[in-house]
Length: 220
Ligand code: E4P
Image (tube, rainbow, N blue to C red; front, side, top):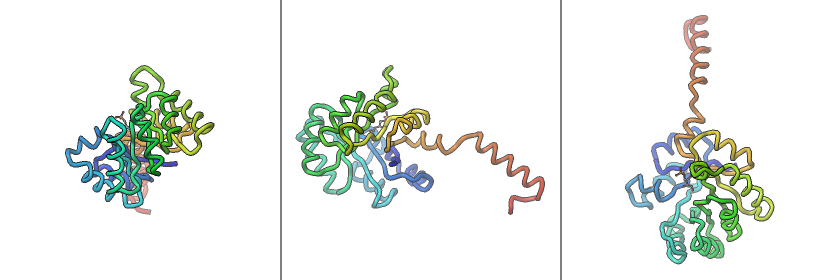
């Protein structure tokens, strides 16, 4: 099981990396743009925050295959193990095929349909990222896309895996895991929701009060 944070906010990554067993950080152009710094600075800071052995993901910006490939090669020059996120368009599929031939690890992103995601796996993408919440927001069913894609990959492309993405609720995350997803990336607010629950705080406060009432202080 691989768990990633979907953010470029270094402060949050540092905090959550101490608490959660994360394997690394995923980014996209919107996430990086929020930091208002050059992407290579952002990626350097993220790598330092999660440690040299953790996995980074960065997305190409170009919309044509030739430039996508150039950008991927440039990113890999500075970050030799980075996974290159490529939107699954016709140009993106050309780029994924070429990058796979070069043994550059890719992730097919902006996936809204099982068939679309499946094609990126066939083209050689190691990861396929269905956008669960964005599919739901369109009136579709993110979890149905995930479940179909999971079956397709298991049956026909066992060397590719879903990296489920785009979440607004912890329930969406759990549904993906229950559908068999072995990797997932969550935004920091969803990570915080998994950790903090007012009912847990109330339960602990009750234990503290009972102990203090009996023994005077909070010590064993
Ligand atoms: C993943 O590849 C995307 O970067 C991301 O998860 C999209 O999430 P959003 O719908 O919250 O922007």
